[in-house]
Every structure is written in structure tokens, then in C-alpha cells.
Image 1 (tube, rainbow, N blue to C red):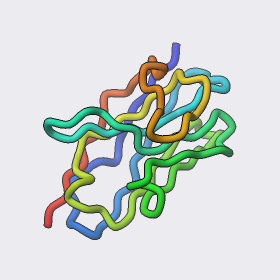
Image 2: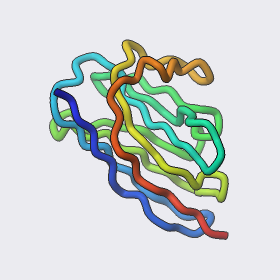
Image 3: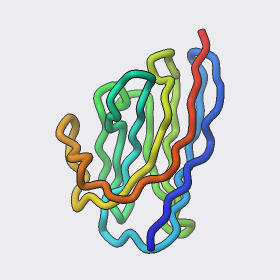
Image 4: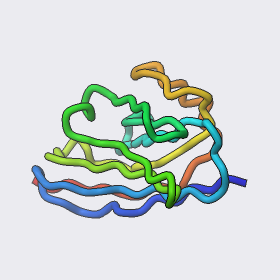
Length: 126
């Protein structure tokens, strides 16, 4: 049984950086692992995703130049390094898995992600 646990969230000033961690227990096989976020009053949206081998990545346009997703296969951890954080980045961030492919934004097929972590909160102050 696959379980995901996020950590690394916190409060940061605008322009700052954070690194989120998604610890994966169990074998996700070739499934994609994605980071999603949900701000207050907003729908959950895809941020970035990485394939099971940790080679192929995809990003939402707002993340492409500021965020980096990576995977440590030995530790079974997926990271989301975030730079130049802005107020609009404030949200609960989740990692999830279960999708057969890492679909390109905007059609990320969120319904295929069947296993979710509890989330980690990111707050950005100006």
C-alpha cells in the first residue's frame, strides 16, 4: 500500500524559497508523482510532476521558471524546490500518485491520482 507524506511547508517572505518533500512509502512503480496546490477558495491545480524513474518532468506555466521537481530514487523522496515565491503561491501543497502518465498542463488528469498525502501549508507574506 502506497502512502505519501509531505513536509517542508512554512511561512516565507515574498521572494523567498522553500523546499517541499514528499516521502513515499511503498512501490509506485511507473506511476507519475505530482505536486498539486489548493489556495483558499480555489480549485486544486497541478504544479509539477515527475515520472517513476525521476527523469521526465512537466510543469504548470507559473512553475516552470521558478520551481524544480526532482526525485531521489534511493530514498524514494520527491522534492519541489520553489524559488521567488509570491503571494499567489500561498496554498496547501499536496503530492499524489496513481496517474499512468505525467500529463502536460493544463490537462493533468487529476482524477487519475488516487493516492494523496495530507498536504503541507505554504504561506507567503509581503
